[in-house]
Image 1 (cartoon, rainbow, N blue to C red):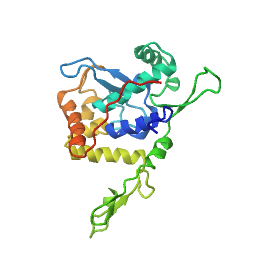
Image 2 (cartoon, rainbow, N blue to C red):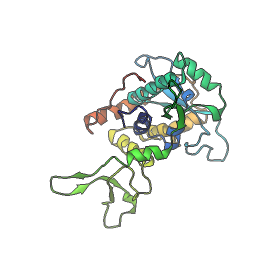
Image 3 (cartoon, one colour):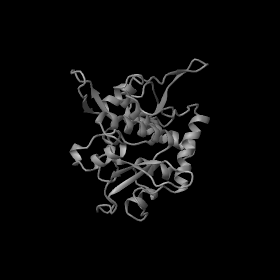
Image 4 (tube, rainbow, N blue to C red):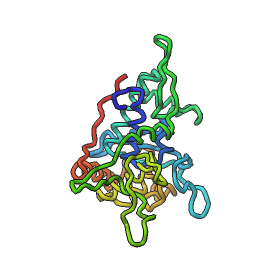
Length: 275
């Protein structure tokens, strides 16, 4: 998949999900104009973030507990370096495909479009049958993500001969056992959640293991928490393009460094996109 330009958006959207914990619905409908460049601060000179309407499908608890609408109309999501690199590459690639001179010009034009006409950041292409013709752009769907994830095997044989995989469903284990159930692909039908939805659970688990503050995890994933409440109810009022508090950036760095140090996964930095 990663060597095929036409399939790469699927893989990149999965990697963005693994780094952010966003729900699949948000991954596949993330629009080009929902990416913003933050105002530079010391140590954070070239940061990107997501700014998404709170009523967009994929956010949990879009209304207040009392049943009223939230005061804030947007939800700002900070991104670690890997997620930013993926998004920067997709923006540049979209610019080339859509024929704009600059990414800023493209985002300005997208922001002016009605909601139904906006272009998603991750899109699929069907090459034109005419020489020199423009490709046909199609929407990315959850099924595309799950098809790739179903091909990723998580089955491991230990030195003592035991076979293990991803441990899931501990809550359904019997009272005398907490062994749970092993899943051997990321799109296992034996789990209530599979594919891109399971990937979100994995992000939560790994972020917890790496030491990220649980409140920050909820905040990043669009769940209700103290951090989210401050922002979504308007108590934490900042400019759309303002940078984030230092403790948020430090939590993102904690996840990235732990993945390399403890999990043995070095998050790959992306080169500039090319057609």
